[in-house]
Amino acid sequence: MTSEPVRKTIKVIELFAVSDKAETLASISRKCEIPVATASRIVNTLEKEGYLRRLKDKSFVRNFYLQKKMSLSEGYLSLLEQVLEDISDQSEQSCEAIFIENCQLYWLSKKESKNVAFRLKAHTGFRRPLYELDSPSRLSLAAMGWDKVREQFDVNAFFEAGALRNSVSKSYLKEQLQNTCLTDVLYDIEGNVRGIRRFSKAIYDKQGKFIHLLCIAEAAISVHDIDAHIEKNKKIINQAVQKLTAFLHSE
Image (cartoon, rainbow, N blue to C red; front, side, top):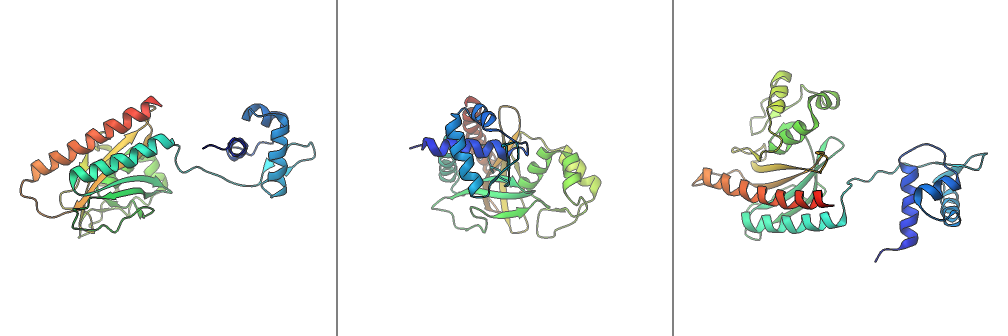
């Protein structure tokens, strides 16, 4: 059950979190759609605890930083957990929701089939640099765009997926990312440096903004009919992404 006083306090904190602009009680009341008396109680408490500073003109400025990791609803995150369970059951492998945080892959959630024989090192909360160009890295970097990649990364430090870790040139990296189809399911037959093969697909919001990856992860071992195996995993992921995207676009 939602606590209304807590919700109002969060609205005030979020108002200050996005700007260093000074706010008066009147502007806080108007922007947060709360009574002036309520705004006064909240900012006085925040000031006493050191989160706000009162200026000479009796306005307030922030003394903190706050950033929400994901702008996703409770409903979407609940659906995502169920989708991960469904994918792990259908594929009999591990299924992961991977986000980008501070220019790293960040595992928000992972579900493993009870029949999986190979346990992954990656777990909820796991982080990994983007420099190995396996399918989740390639798709994430391509979604960022070349200009942002060049600005935020050492473009001479990337290497191919696989045990040999062969380095790639700046021109090769640029070509690979620009030729990546952002709506495809990407995969690496040989797997990454840890011998893990991932089937990865990106999810976008209704404005076309990249949200996160949905992946099936498995040991990169030989499969009797690899083409059929690939098509099975692609179908599972595509159906799941359609379900998640439809929910996102309906909110």
